[in-house]
Amino acid sequence: MVRAVRGAVQVEADEKPLVAAGITKMITQIVDDNLIKVHDIVSIFFTVTGDIKSVNPAAALRTEDGWADTPLFCAQEPNTEGAMPRVVRVLVTCNNFKADQKVKHAYLGGAVSLRPDLK
Image 1 (tube, rainbow, N blue to C red):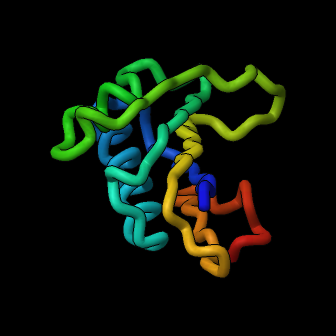
Image 2 (image 1 turned 90 degrees about the horizontal axis):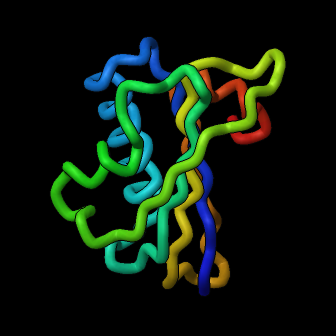
Image 3 (image 1 turned 180 degrees about the vertical axis):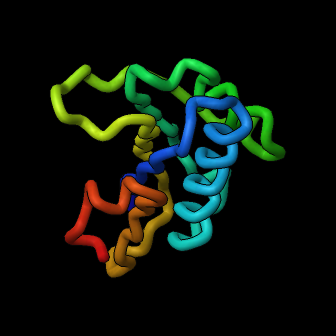
């Protein structure tokens, strides 16, 4: 069964090591919590707020072992008044979910406030 898992992380500052670490932590949590095998991932779609300019999330993840062959794509979030700053969001689409398997989304750092229903 094909399913999608959402996630977001708010980083402390737009610095390449901080943004890359946040992305890696978020993706690792999604994969681990949902028992996803990397070869079952169809694609990963990232968005970033306009204040993140230090690194492209796809390029950051691609430097990690095992992600070179995964289709990755990025876009910029709409510049919405009052939006949370310094946020990377993700949508991971993957195969092989069991019909009764509950999806576990990952909202990290300040981004937990984006989905209070998941607490």
